[in-house]
Length: 142
Image 1 (cartoon, rainbow, N blue to C red):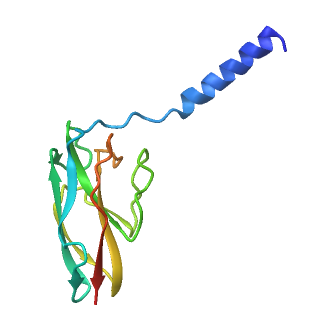
Image 2 (image 1 turned 90 degrees about the vertical axis):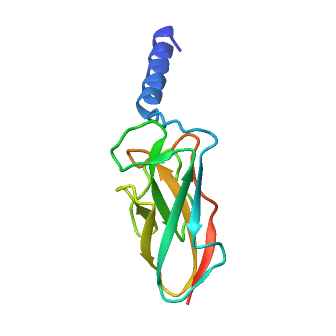
Image 3 (image 1 turned 45 degrees about the vertical axis):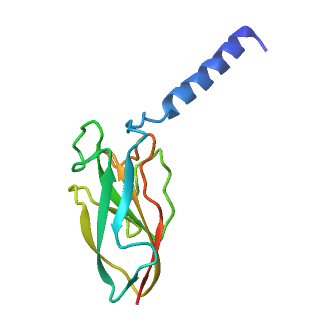
């Protein structure tokens, strides 16, 4: 292989790496914590409507689009695992966005066992670095 072909190949690899490089994640304090205040792990809820109360320690809560250091908004993950932590958090029935800066919300769930987990998103709905998420809890709706 000639030097010219080798150089062209290296440039192509570099260009591909450059264009696929991820956007830098928003930094967060390592001591920040996200947690579910209510319901508690193992709670049994009568009826399908419940209030979820969300807590955050070491950072502030602000609406989507507000790009302020150490400030983000909650996302409630229902019956799902954490999404990729370097991409925008999905917005569907399993990934509920609270982009107005809510810290509690009324949620309706069908009867049965459900998992709940919080994930903090930045102004663009992308998890922080390091990611801030709560323990996953299980509740039962009857």
